[in-house]
Amino acid sequence: MALDLDSIGSPIGPMVKDYTWKDAALYALGVGAGFDDLDYVYEKQLKVIPSFSIGAVFDFLMTVATDSAADLRGILHGEQDILFHAPIPAQGRLTTTGAITHMYDKGADKGALVVASADTFHDSGAKLFTNIFTLFCRKDGGYGGENAPGDRTTFPDRDPDFTQEDTPSADQPLLYRLSGDVFALHVDPDFAKASGFDKPIMHGLCTHGYACRAVIKHLMPGEPERMTRFRTRFSKTLYPGVAVKTLIWKDGEGRALFKVVNQDNNEVVIDNGVVEWMTDAEQQRRESLGDIHVDGKVAVVTGAGAGLGRAYAIELARRGAKVVVNDLGGARDGSGDGSSSAADEVVAEIKKAGGEAVANYDSVSTASGGEAIINTAIDTFDRVDILINNAGILRDRSLVKMSDQQWQQVLAVHLDGAYNVTRPALRHMRGQGYGRIVLTTSAAGLHGNFGQTNYSAAKLALVGFMNTLKLEGKKYDIKVNTIAPIATTRLTDDILPPDMKDKLKPELVVPLMLYLAAQQCPDTGGIYNAGMGFFSKAAVVTGPGATVGDGQTPPTAEELAAKIQSIRSLKGAKEYGDLNAALMPILDAFDPKDPIR
Ligand code: NAI
Image (cartoon, rainbow, N blue to C red; front, side, top):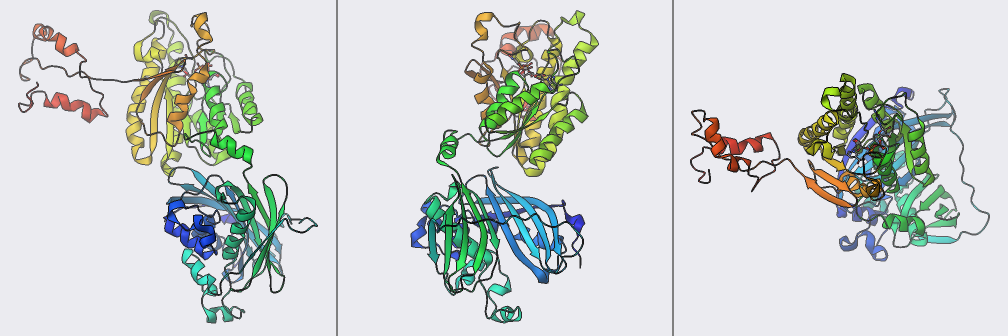
């Protein structure tokens, strides 16, 4: 059977795996941990060995083998490259999605390679690791495809800087297989003989775990969470009980090369090893970021070429998010053809500081623009976790002087803009069961401002948009909140008094945006004022009210006027979570069981 070239790019997953500290400890015992590595097995101080990640995606590897239509009799696990994005928590739910990315033809007598990549996320929302698998398909070569790019590791011509000797027990595969790889070759003597071996052999991935422990012990002792990459090539089989030696050469700051050698016959069983880990400087940078996390997340910020959006994008990237910097680059009133330079400059600034960002120049004011903005996130970074609807323009006129165009253009950017971008983003957020959406309102909408009926209407409409979206997003862990900022930007430059301008830095609004965009944000459906380092909550509240008449015969306006003090009163006013809750006081008003009314 030939390889199915059409399987390249077809999504695999999501595959979900729940695990507890016992799974992590069982894996650790399977790869030789004991009292010398108590952190890996003792629940009170548990640290997960990074190579546990491959066990967590074992089913994915199996699916790659079947989906590729490779001849299963000829398959060997060729290489494994793992990139670590965040420490692996001691328990939780792992969700893995990916695809076959390449197939290479080494020739009819040499076989083919099937390469697949998978991202795994924890239920906290953190992206934990990316696995890149290479299957060596011995019976599938010669189909006329391109050959694999060569990448042999050249080991330094000197003695290794560290050597770690280990002797897996003769029964090691029996313990290791309990972590998921129950293939008969590692347990059944008859099957092993039929496959050409004297007895069951070690799992390559078990030796892989030994190597992972060895490099941690010598390069980042006690801190497995510092590992950022672990690459290996499986070159020979090994019998259980045979002593192995992991040879390690430092190769610059935060990088080393390694191989694992069979001590009986000097064969290299794991070759081309590369390990990378966080340097002290990088670790200090991450520690300085505190407990509010957006690292590894993909954020879209609209109108991020200037003002508040620029400040948001820069901080999100500084905190480790990958950012789509959207900006049309138009004039303050939205006129003109726009320019790519606004978004490009912010992207350049982020990249210069070591962050990840991509520019997008579409307008939020059309549905196709909104789709294109979200597609930029998906095409570049594979997902979208955070959406900051921030783009904005002003076309101020008192209502009688306002043209239809001035009215419509402002609604198109602010209100339609939020709809156009949020809708495609929401489809992805629902699929992944996670999202943070921030909308931007204004004191003009919440309270009014002369000459801004268009802007005020659009800005308060966004609060209504949020009120319903928070309900629709709830079961998917999508939180929606709204910021009413005040800051010196192009939009407010000629409105604000000169003595206040310096004090109203956009950066002083940023902490609120970050709090609402972060994984830890517990709130949804909130409106928050922010400016000059002052923050407060705004809300639509309803007073306790009063009944007028008997609820049967319509009362007169005079009877109502007589009770206007109670009707107006906001003493004891309440905020309601949805329409039904807000209706209850009305429905209960004449309930005789309620003595207050
Ligand atoms: P700004 O003018 O500095 O930034 C807005 C950005 O949005 C500009 O770079 C602009 O090119 C971009 N933009 C405009 N139309 C767009 C479109 N159709 N598609 C994509 N990008 C577009 O203004 P500022 O102050 O940073 O405004 C950000 C948000 O904050 C706006 O929604 C604004 O209404 C709101 N706001 C700002 C206040 C302030 O005091 N600066 C007060 C209340 C609300």
